[in-house]
Image (tube, rainbow, N blue to C red; front, side, top):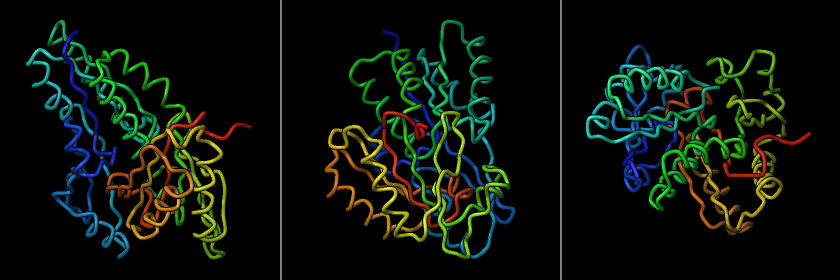
Length: 294
């Protein structure tokens, strides 16, 4: 079987120790604060998570950029020169143009390196949703699966990855263009907290509102029981933006309620956190379907 490597991007939000253990290349992404550009890596070497969210809470408005074709060329070329193929699992095309850029770079490089292949797969997921697909892809590779088999599995499974997300308000998502203005009115003054999901197209969609954080956390916990067919034999993931205490409480509640085979907790980095703002929590898992069935 032709040798290949798996590459992804930093929007998987893997904790540093998990990123090291997986042993795959993770492409950093850039964000800007007060006119200064920083690159975010799994170990947050250029700006810590704490500093980032402290500055956001203080009123600074970060912006993000996509991975451009030149970056992909620099990342992919050394691998191709070694005679290896590439499976790249990308951040959702519904939230960024990174996947489209990777496709253009891949076609160009395949012409430059005849016989080499680059499969670019749109995860249509974000944060731990994308990370969950990558984690399983690495395990499949270790078990002997081919690049094509893994790519097919990701494309089949991505529409089953549930993202149930509790946000404090929608202003950051609206400002970043991730949701339209008409959906951004969330009744903040009344303590209403929006629940949003990832759609099959890889976009964010507000789907419900709850009164207060406590009700919001209960909502997330209950959705696991409703949408995850077999929690005891599943991977469940809790992610948050600078609300570790609450996230740990949710983690413990999931562990005691569902006793999952694997349960992870991680903090969302600046690339996604720039658009969600602080105090966001989410649960991610592979369910029977990505969005609620009508």
